[in-house]
Each structure stands twice: as C-alpha cells, then as structure tokens.
Amino acid sequence: MSDEGTTLTPLGKIITFLLVVGLLGLGWYVWQRQQAAQQTPPPAQQAQNPAQPAATPAAPVAAAAGTPATPPAADAKEAPDAGSITTVKEYKYIVGDKLPAVKGASQYKWDDKNKVLRFSYNVWAGWLPVIAANKGTKPNPESVFAKKHGFQVEMVLMDDPVAARDAFVAGEVHTLWGTVDMMVLFAPELMKDSRTAPRIVQQIDWSNGGDGIVVRKGIKTARELKGRTVALAQNSPSEYYLTSLLLSSGLKPVDVKMKYTATAFEAAAAFVADQSIDACVSWAPDIYNISDRVPGTRILSSTKDANKLIADVYALRADFMRDHPAVAQGLVEGIYEGMRLVKADPAPACQAMADAFGMKPADVQGMMGDAHLTNAAENASFFLNAANPTNFERTWKNAAYVYRELGRISAPVPFDQVMDFTVAQKVAAKGEFAADKDESVTTFAPVPVKRLVAEAPILTQTIRINFFPNSSNPFEPARDQFGAVVGGRLYDPNVTATLEQVGRLSGQFARAVIMIEGHTDGSMKGKINESAVKQLSTERAEAIKRALVDKYKFDPNKFTIVGRGWDAPADPADAQNHAQNRRVEIAVYSPEGQ
Image (cartoon, rainbow, N blue to C red; front, side):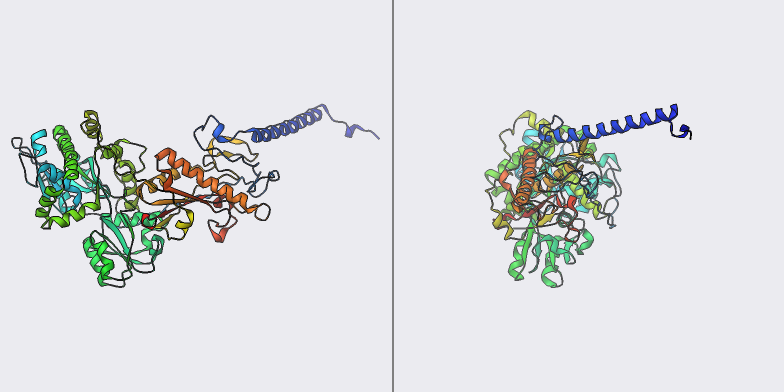
C-alpha cells in the first residue's frame, strides 16, 4: 500500500508551519497582556493623571461580562467585571407655552447734556445699594454717580418683568432688572436686534431666604411632591426654583401638577385658601407667615439653604454699552460704593425705598435679610472665576437646562454672548474695592452621620459615579477583556461631567450639608467579611469628597461620608446589576436640622 496520501506536500508543510507560529504568537500576546495588567501601577502613580485620587488595587478583569478570566484575588471585595456601566438616559423635552414675542425694538433715548441713566427695578431689597448710591430714586446731582462718575440715575419702578423688558426694547430704560434665569428666558428675543442684546455686567445679590416652597403635613422631601398640586407663578424665579429642585431629585416637571397664578403672592394666597393645593412656591414674607395661618404646614426648602441658586442681576443694552462704556463702569462702581453705604448705615436707603414702595421703613429693613448683597470680590468670583461652581456660566447653563426641560426655550443663548466681564476686570485692576472680601462663604462644623440619617433630606441626587471593581478611584482607566489598561479611556467616561454636576449642586446649596454615600456591588456576598466592602464603599465616598474639595475649594466639613457596602442596590428590582451598584449617591440636608 502506498503511503503517498499521508505525506505532506511542500505547500501543506508551509501552511502547518504558519499555523504553529501563529498559535505560538497568540499565546505570547495573551501572556504579555496579562503581565501588563498585573504590573500596571495604580492610576494615581501614572503620569497621565497624577493629580487624581489613588485607586484601590484592581482585580483581574473578566474576559466577558459575568465570566471571570481568573479567580478573584484573596482580598477582593467585588468579583471581576469587564462589563461597562449602565448608560443614563437623557431627559425628554416638555412642551410649554412660549413667552410673548418682543415687539417694536428701537434705539434708546439719551440726553447727552443731562446724562440721566434710567435704571429699571422691582420691589426687592437687593436694589438698596443703587438707592443708597443715588441718595433716593430720582436724578440727584449729589449722588455718588453724579459726583464721581459724571452722570445721574433715575430709578424706574417696574414690577412686571414683561413691561420692564418691553421698555428696555423700546429704549425707554437703559437697564433691565431680573434674575439670571429670567434673562435666559428673555435673551433669545432680545438677541434678534443686536442693539437690544443684553450685556450683563454685575450681580446685585443672591436670594437668601426670599424664595421658598411651603408644603402641607406629610411631605418631607422634594421627591414626595410627585403627583401633588403646586401653586406658583409661571415664567418666574418660583418656577425655576421648583423645577431645579425636581430635576435634582430625579423628577420631571410633568411629575407634579402645576397650578399657575399671576404672581408669587397669589400662589401663597391660593395655597392658604384651597386645601387641595399641596404646596406653593412664593416669596418672603408670605412663606414665613403661612404656618401661622395654616397649622401643619412647613417650609420644605428656601433660598436660605439653596442660597446660590437665584442670582439677581441687571443688563445694559448692547448699543448703550458700546456708546457709553465709562457710564457702564461708573454705574458698577457706584453700586459697589452703595453696598458699602448700606452696610454702614441702611436707614437712609430703607427710608427712600419705603417711600418708593409705599411701605414702612421697618418693613424694608426686615426684607434686607432676604438678599445677600454681592460685593466686588464676590462679583469677581461670579464673572471671572471659571472654577467657581456657582459662577455666571454655570448659573446660566443650569437655568437654560431647566427652561429647556419646561419647553420654554428650544435654543438657549450661550452664556458668553450675554456676559460682559470686561467691567469686572477693569474694576479689579483699579483696586478701589480691593478690600472687599467674599462674605458668602459658609463654614461648617462636622456633622455626625447618625444625626443626618435621622432627618429627611431636602433632596437625593439621582446622578451616580460608577467605579471599577475593587477601586475607589473615580478616574480609573478602562480595561480591555484581558485586564490591560486602555489608553485615553476611563471606566466611567462621564465622571468629569458628573463631578461638575455634583459641584454645582453643592455650590447652589451653599449652606446645606451634603452626605456622600458610597456603595459596592454584592458579587462577593457570602464569600468575604461585610466589613471589607463597607471599607471600600467608605473609600469611594471619601474619594468623591476629596475630588470636590480639591477642585472647588469647599469646606471639607460641608460633606459627611458614609459607606453602605452592598446593603442598598441602585435598583432593588435589578439587584444583580453590579456595574450600576458600584456608585456614589448625594443627599442634601437643610442647615436648619443641624
């Protein structure tokens, strides 16, 4: 019998040789990748991210989700997992009514001989510095503006924001009063005529207890407003405040039944008169008086705790800024001097404001606590400090997000097309107000976890930072299926944006205490001591605290940390979603409970 059929041909020998070499090469490649994974130092030691928190050494990563490539390390608290984190869905837009279209834009009126700037304002204590510097509300040659800057100011009371906007467009007044969130609403129409484009150059104050949400008995947190009826004024700071709170609590505007009134004061009156209304958003002094009239009611949240959420500003017309830059700067400097006058002796300004509002001076003085006046140092931080978690940019973007969710605007104007920080730069360069210090900074004493958990938080933030197995480093690099680091990618690619969101929320609730809860997955439940996972979850909470303090310079005592281990899955109905369970959550507690 011939053995010709069992002998390899020259071509067969070549193919066999190549197959053997290929298999040997693949085996060497896999071995090299595993060695690289084991020898990779923690991310804190890598040059690509030297400033980030150190990681807990990571276990080898699974070759496929739920299938470990190697057994977990002896000290592992979580099983290896190569699966990616769960993607968070974006909110959907909610259709709503649009603001009335601006009509009849025209050039501003100005007498170059008399030089009288017409300054619009509303019934609000924040405008006291303007009145103080002007020595009243009428044009005054003895005012700070006239004596030091060569022009006079006439204050024009316009409590209706739409009427104020229309007068601004028509050139009847040179400034437009408002909160940043109101400016976000007005800007798209105002920008259609370049002459009426708003130029925001100065912050007057932060609402400091002037706005609040009052609820009936049984409602303890913002999340419990779901399905409830809330009275409030539409297209106002009240709506912005409520919606910000809802969104931060994981709710949408459609989750509550909004009963709109013409004004915030009417919202309070409706709440008192109609027991079917579960909550109202209103202003001081009404929010503090309701409990005397309706037993069992309480303030759920006010701008005493969310004291960097609503910013009062004013805008100048763009054409006026172009033609009279010295007047614009003189207005800003004069108002800063007015803040010093109010601080030294508020009585004269309170008397003038009382006369303008038809109130008693004592009532005006009582309103002063509702606004925190922002001096030159605080304005510099608001307009110039890109790292400030509640600067103009972030405040504007937050308002834009809120009003897009409400369907009020579809394409918000970018913040840098309305913010003009050149005036703040010039004021800082002159140094006249260099002695001003940031008086809005809150200091904290450490708050025990037990004290916080005994209370109901104002809100619990639904955002999550996801962690690599056995790591407390939020900036952990991604790994491939062999456990090797993937260059230029993070395990949680959204971590920077998430920290930005947490920083902004923490800054908005500047007086509130923030509890950071760390969590692990339950993949090693029954295999290791529970204390080990509690430690890992505590380290995760501490890492987020450290990242926030380092980036935004918060008082460390503002944050209380706790490790929950595997006790609280992100979704009890999907408790085995390990990637989602490796997270940190944020809860905001009122300072009143401390």
